[in-house]
Image (cartoon, rainbow, N blue to C red; front, side, top):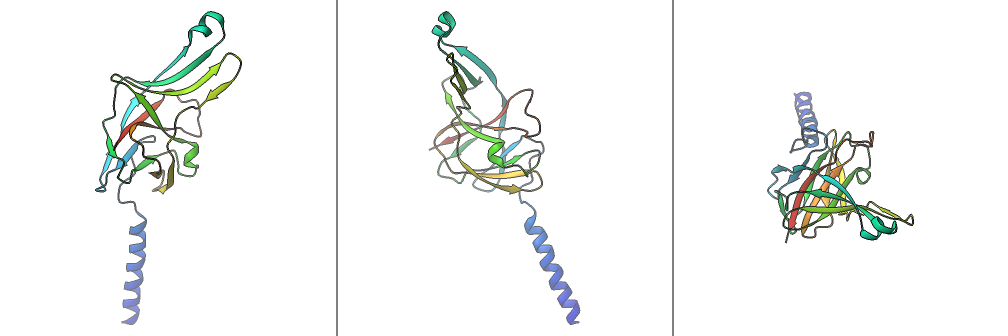
Length: 188
C-alpha cells in the first residue's frame, strides 16, 4: 500500500511539473506573428501592416550631387489599433523560426513619428561624402525569454508614449520579399 501511495505522489509531482512547463497562452500560429498580453492575461494579436520603403534625396543632392538621402518606412494609417498603457507591464509573445537565436538580433521594436495621415520611421541616411547612418530606428529595450517551442516572451523595459512597430527577421534568410510590421501604441 505504501508503494501505491508513493507511486501516486510521484506521478502527481511529474504531471504537475509537465503542466507547469506548458504555456498558458498558446504560441501564435505563424512565424512573425505577435501577440500582446493584456493586464488581465488575455492575448490580443497585433495588427500587421505592409510598409512602403521610400528613399528621398534633399534638393542639394539632386541638383549638385552633394547632400543626403534618407530611407523611411511608411504606413499609410495614422495610428495602431492595439493601445497599451505605459503603467501596465507590457509583454508580447513573438513566434520566430526557432527560439535558439538571441532575440535582440532578430527582433526590432521601434518608434514611429506620426501625423494625421501616416506613421514614419527613418531606416537609414546616406550622405554623398560616404557617411552612412544605417539602422537609425529608435529602438525600445526589452528583456526576453524562451516561450514554448518557437517563441519568445518579451517584456518592454522602455515604455514611452507613442506609436511603435515590431519587425521579426528570419536569421536564415536575410532577403525577405516585403517588410511586415506588427503595430501597437503606448498611451500615458
